[in-house]
Every structure is written in C-alpha cells, then in structure tokens.
Length: 157
Image 1 (cartoon, rainbow, N blue to C red):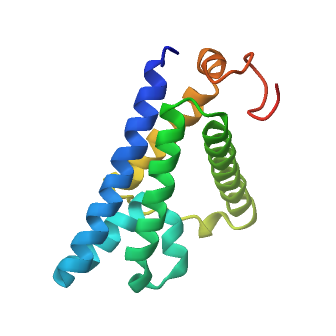
Image 2: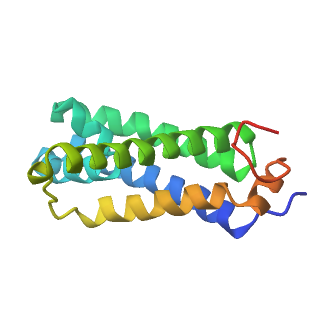
C-alpha cells in the first residue's frame, strides 16, 4: 500500500470540500429561489470562470459540472493517479501564468486602468489553496509517490 503524503490528503480533501460547497450552493439556489443571488455569488467566488458567462441562470448547472470535475480530480489525487496530477498542475500553471501576464500587461500599458476590488473570502481562500496545491504537487517527494522520479514538468518522466 502506498503511503500518502499529507499534501495529497489535504489536496483531495480540499477538492471534495469545494465540490460539496458547489453542490450545496446549487441545490439551495434551485430549491430556494430567494437565496439564488447569494448562492450564485458563492459559486462564482469558488469558480471564477463561471462569471465569464454573465448568465446567472446557468450558474447552478455549471456549478454541478465543476463539482463533478473537482470530485473526480479529488478521487484521482486520493488514489495517486498521474492523470489527475497532470491535469491539476497544467490547469493551475496556466491559470497563474495567464493572470501574471495579464496583470503585467495592464500595469505596463494602462497603469491607471488597474483597480483592485476587495475579493470575497471564498476567492482569497481559493487562490491560497490553489497555490498550496500547485506547490504540493510539484514537491519532489509527492511526485515520487505519483510514480515520478522527481523534478521536471508533470508530463516528463
């Protein structure tokens, strides 16, 4: 039996917790229309990509789709599947790289156009957790548990 590092357990737990929060938000928005705007806010904070659709009626169904993806990735991480690690590392590398380039471009091209609004606690927790997940999955000891020799990109052996 493979020994799971604490980082792997925490990553899987976080993904399952996020999936549960998305499912509960979607169910509460569906069953109680009076809380739909609050639930949509929680959903959009947990999955900022959903804000791009600008159609709040779709938030509930998109939340369920993202909950399924997070739960599946959590199961993959728990069972030390390379595919789950690869998907998460590529996704987070792309996310943070794109955000850094975008901020640098805005700051260079139009510095007065850069305005930060106070993010919600959910958004902040998601960013910190994503950084932890990326660092955890790139740790050489964790990579060895996934069958990697350590070092390098997630897809290189």
